Each structure stands twice: as C-alpha cells, then as structure tokens.
Length: 239
Image (cartoon, rainbow, N blue to C red; front, side, top):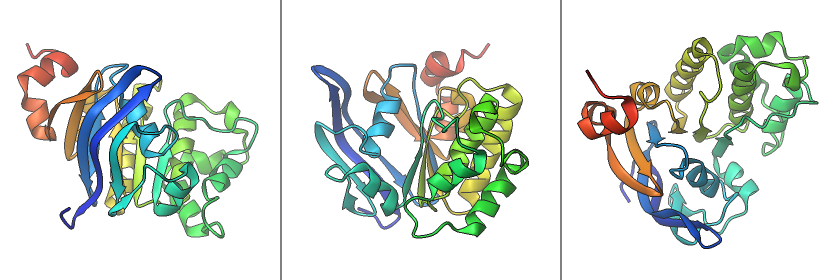
C-alpha cells in the first residue's frame, strides 16, 4: 500500500439476503483528495457507504483505513478511528436544537471542542443563526448543512458524504458544494456519493462510476467529464 493511500476497498462484496448489492468492487482514496462515487439510483452507492461505516457487514473483501482492517469492527469504533458519515436523508434529530445535534456529533471525543463548533458555524452561518431552533423546523438544505456540520464535530480525517444535494434547492446545493471544497482544503479527505454527477466531478479530484454493484469506469474528474460513455449515461449527452 503506497504511503499516501489513506483508505482502500478491495474486492468488496455485500448482499441483502440472496441479492448481491456490491459485486467485488475495489477503490482507493489518497490523503487530502475528494473522490466521488457516481451512479444511478440502486447502483450500490449508499450500500458502499453504509458498509464502510459498518452499518452493513461485508460478505467478502477488505476495507482498510490507514492500514487497519475495518470489516470486523463495530460502527462506533469507525468514528473513533477518524471516519465520519453524513448519511443519505440527513437523519437529524428533529426534536433537538441545532446546537444539541452538533454536540451529539462530538460523542466520540472526551469533550466537545469549542474551536470545531466555531469552525462549523463559520462554514454554515445559518446554523449559528438558528442554533437554538429545533432541527425539525429547518429547511431541507439547512438540515443538510446540519448533518455535515454534525459529522465534522468528531474531527474526522475522512468524511463520507452520502447524497448531500438530494432534494435541496439549487442555490443551496451550490453553497453546500462550496463548503465541501473548504472542508477538504482544511485537510479533511472526502469520499462523496452523489447523483448530481456534473457538480460532483467539478468538485472532485477523481471518480468511480458504479453500475448495479460494479465499478464500470474510473479516472480523474477531467477524464470522466470528457468520456463519451460517461456523458451519455450520467451527464446527459452533449449536443
């Protein structure tokens, strides 16, 4: 494993009962990169993310972070190792305030780091304005900001972002993608699952295209944006 590879998946297989959802994929993420996994609905993107977090168990293959095997660890240990997951569908606690949600994100730390909280508020000023508000009263875009902010509270080395643009107004998608870039610039490595292929490739260094549980294309963002096959399938044909 080369020195700068932070995270690696090898020959991963995941099944739901007798149905194979992930069919032997391999990918890697280097320190400081933004890597995106693209694909249509049902391609296996969220399954991959949930397996990295150990919310689902692999049938075969390995997942390593900083050389350590993750597939035998319980989910809470994954956070302690330095991987944080902002899930699809946001999953904020609606009956808690914005700030209480953020504090829950720091559960793996011995005490909450005020500086990290300040940084989250700097990234997402709306959260600061609404910090005493119940999370359930926020708009979809604000809840997405909260989900990302909460996942940063554990001071991760690698952030898993699952569909951050799903169901959000375009203007807020732009803002969220800008913040993701800023998070990466602060030294957090990002693995991004996203249906909005064009926006994801503009942001990412590299990408993998997943189709029915298999990786069908991979390359730099430039290569994927320029590939006719990727354009036809995922970016809408060029005219």
